[in-house]
Length: 248
Ligand code: ADP
Image (cartoon, rainbow, N blue to C red; front, side, top):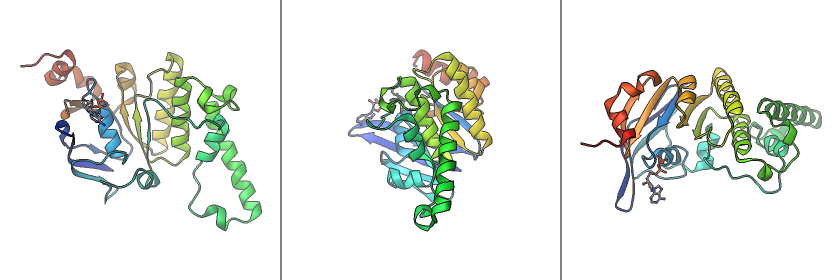
């Protein structure tokens, strides 16, 4: 579904990613790991169009998307969430999800009134089901910018799912989310995988990774050093060294 070929990125003289070859199959959940500063967020920014790679190619569903704008990439179904979500000031949580619900292109223009009403009802139903699923019903009518950081992450995830994500790129989805909601998050992500969504997840919580991911790739100083099942991660010497900081 997604394949990168020799992705490189430098900021001035600083080489942040080099020769990154990553493949993600349809329906997979892939964990993206690595010590702080290893290039994980930079890679997500490149895959979602927020940064241009300095070199290499990105193929998604048979197209070369390297250098496409974030909006164009989002329209292809690649959606991402951020470590620190940015919420609109004046929208309630319910409104935010309602506006996120995917509309087929031109649907509003072509719809006759009865159909538009039925679509609006359906959108409302989907938005409120999502709020319930994420345990956000209680804050449905509060401003999205006023709920807790952990709740904002869940809301951003809900918006990405309702927006028609086919490939979801999640940047540290559990940071700031309490343990009970973390379990709910694992269930939600497994659920959406069953609906055919593919996931790439930047994460530090090994328990979460073990429960969720089919496969892990590990970045160290901008280089992919491992690609294995979560249960084999700590058998890999390079991974252990990257985390413990032991260098030859
Ligand atoms: P991670 O997500 O693995 O913690 P990042 O991708 O955020 O790592 O950062 C990798 C490296 O790139 C870090 O050394 C960081 O300082 C550097 N970096 C990230 N963005 C920029 C930027 N816009 N300008 C200069 N350096 C950057």
